[in-house]
Image (cartoon, rainbow, N blue to C red; front, side, top):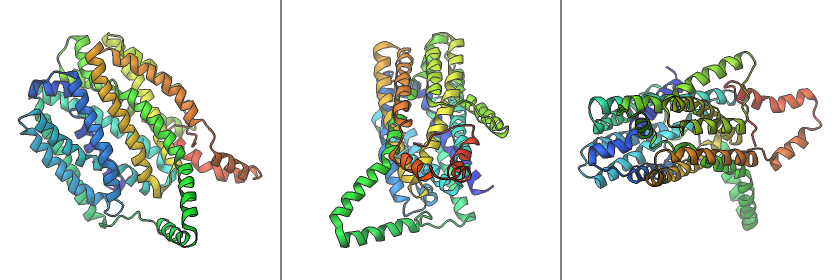
Length: 445
């Protein structure tokens, strides 16, 4: 198995172990510690997002010197040990401390995303992003089903051992990759360009330090504005999507009157199953030279319709809504990620990804706090209605943030306006072909 496929396999274990308890934290705290407050479960999920937000930039900074594969050996081992330790936590505060420390260490596996994209050619980015998106959805399937099965057959706190097993498997895979691929401890992605940039900065300081520094700040801010706009859109989108997540299984059980965790886990995982089908359909259409209409606004409105259907308190409407929601979610996530890498450069992948991930986790954080408060005040149905309204606003926001022409685009257009048709195709062709492999269309703004 080559490096790329092994990293995808390792990411699968990571996502599965993460997703085991995600749908069941209200039931977990009720069964293990007798805590039934929905605000408490929402606050806990929000704190997971906080620690990931704060620690991922730290891991990214360390990975500038220590190769991420070596870093994961230590962090995943620590995550597994802390996960096992949280099993023996006798009180809720001790469980919070140990489990959140575990998520701090576990978050380092997110570095594998930009790590692998650096190893991939630009032409294969779209397909790889589609595959990784399916891995995330597949992880939701396997994790939710595994968590529901463990909780139904044994009890809630045994899920912790399954989470720890995933961490130790990642550690072993990293050790094997380091040995078989002779991966050095020093990061392989320290480019000559960055060294040259450091030398240029040193020369500028010697000549005109203050002016060069001010110009660099202005230039850097202009260059990062597209990423920041995209990150803002991702924040709004993730807030809406994750608003329904903490209490989805509780909502299903309340509507159906069934206490089966396995059934609620399967319903929770429907979007993941749809994502598997969507990837295959996109690939087949791309192979035939066709593609699905993939306007961001249209998919956001489809996502809104699916969200509203889930708010109809009948099992059939919920299942139909989950299917529509899952289809739109996959198309939106792939397009947003392709856009991110199209706006970035290989030397900036990790830094730009950490910025985007920060905003995404901020959206999850806000959603987690809001979900607990909303459910506590108004019931389990309200998050679907509020999330639907939020998605409509996000669709309007996407038109403003993604469809705005950039100064760089205008300049590039003027530079290519005098080219022949063949030359113009040479300039614009790679980005277009980069996106057709997964059946998505992206405007790199």
